[in-house]
Length: 501
Image (cartoon, rainbow, N blue to C red; front, side, top):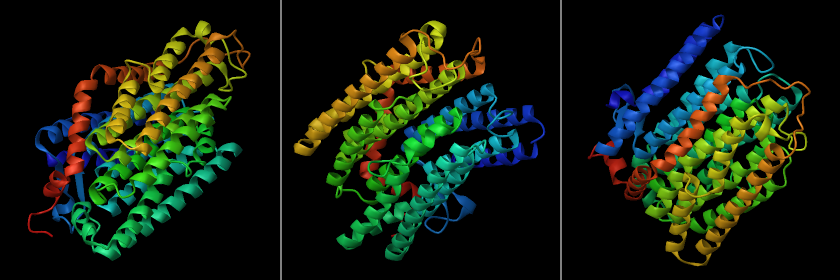
């Protein structure tokens, strides 16, 4: 099964090259893109089953053994992330095709959208599967290079302005990451994460802490944790709806994944637990306070995106099996739900002509299906029982209570407050945009929404509900993944030959 591990990276890259060659044949481009992402979804499902049953699946690129060569590792955490991200990117692609963004209109010709989108997917999966820090950096750079194109599609003034901010912040975080990679190599002589798991422990504590904080700073910018998140609410809402949705669902989660991976494999022991808890609490509270103050649906969702990153960082800070399991479960849940809500925002804009809550109303009567598509994931995000959002938050809060101490108790209270304010924000959107008298922004809104857009959004809503129905098995997978992360031994033994120090 090791031959399957590179496919989630290689297939989208080959698809990107092919779709670029087919730039004059949009129907073939669409078919190639859907086939590539569908194939990646199937491969990811197989890898998850294999990693769950037999342990991490490893491929040594070019036949070079670790730590000399590049290693791709599909353990339970990486395989689960690839599976969920593949499902999300496929649904967003279908949504985009239905909207016509990839073919005509203001955003971009097909020759740009499909290759760039597939390159973005390859960068995300490469980051999840990377077995060394430099390859993780390469994964980040691939997805960021593609995101620079996608976030400025159409070349409008507002997109170029906000896109410039996004580019500057991304380049800064990449420079910090590259600096951290150089420092790690200078201190240890390797970048292979399995080998670093042993060598970093032997470093002086001050050197080790410096490396840890440098990596955390770089990943914190990418994950949009407070106070490094000011760029996100201004950058994401201006992009086309499919682009915003995939950015919100995946790009920040790649940063969270990097934090989870490095804090457990490279820097175990919770040496910066207090810092992470403070950051998690501020991210939750400041983010949701920003959300309740917004009058635009996309900006409101952007602030909730920032806020709920705090739950994941809280789980990492606890560094217990229960905390890590809750964090992984919440990452899976949040990728799906946040993407869904941004797709719904695109449907609202398509139907009403605006996402400004002051100009929209009566959608529950005019488009009842749209009301359902918003209501279910909104309640899921708010953590209303029995949805997966409630189960994920409950797992994290229980882990916080079990940890004991004043700071975890404060974080439990902050998490509860954030959940209540998320419910308030979602209810406010429902009351204004869906429940009050019709007040459409455009004089002649479309009679009905494109079926493929609605179908793709419905599929993601159903996936969020499926996580609720399969919460027991999913929690078992996340608990096993968390256990392996804490032990580190399964990962290290799968990657390194036994005679390598």
